[in-house]
Image 1 (tube, helix red, strand yellow):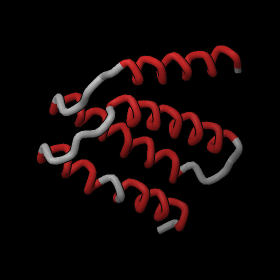
Image 2 (tube, helix red, strand yellow):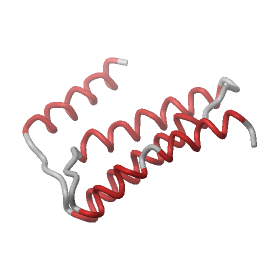
Image 3 (cartoon, helix red, strand yellow):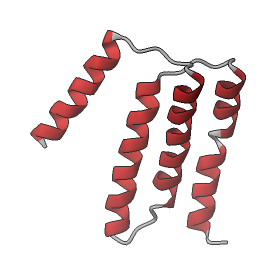
Image 4 (tube, one colour):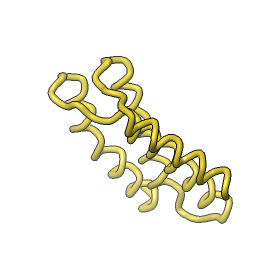
Length: 98
């Protein structure tokens, strides 16, 4: 197994305890944080892929964070506050300024 892919597999395995906690109802996390981290990791993985680098770690992190955010949506185990709207607004401002 390629060591780059192996690093990515370890990256996705670290999300397993979080996913188990979400599905058991013992863990309450921020949906916004995981959705945004997934998007950020996908952007980073794509940029690294275009440069011919090791994209596996951020790509599989993105999958893990995406699974966490989808799990939170399915289980309805998240909260949405004014802080989440503020963070989303800042993200869009950064994208526009970029």
